[in-house]
Image (cartoon, rainbow, N blue to C red; front, side):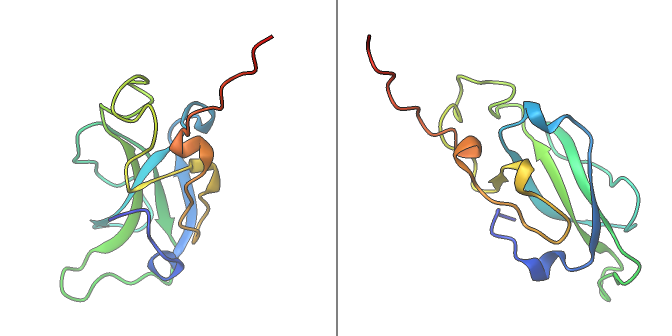
Length: 126
């Protein structure tokens, strides 16, 4: 799922748990995953690493068809800027990326100049 999550996708979030220091991350990818539990660390089955996840409140109910909860997971892939600063995302960011400093429970997060790593204006010459 993209960064275009809405508040209605996140209505049952009660807490966001970060596994890494956000000062070192310009952006994180976010997705809604289906998990068996609403309030423990979810399994992670992607390349890269999980850097955070949401805990759901008591009012969250599982999907009636699958019995699974939809929870937000934050992650980075091996080719993201934190691992390859000169790589594909030296400027710009993936579509599902947001600045982790803008994330809060029930808040989808936003793209910022930091997350997009916009090119800096040329420094004035002396």
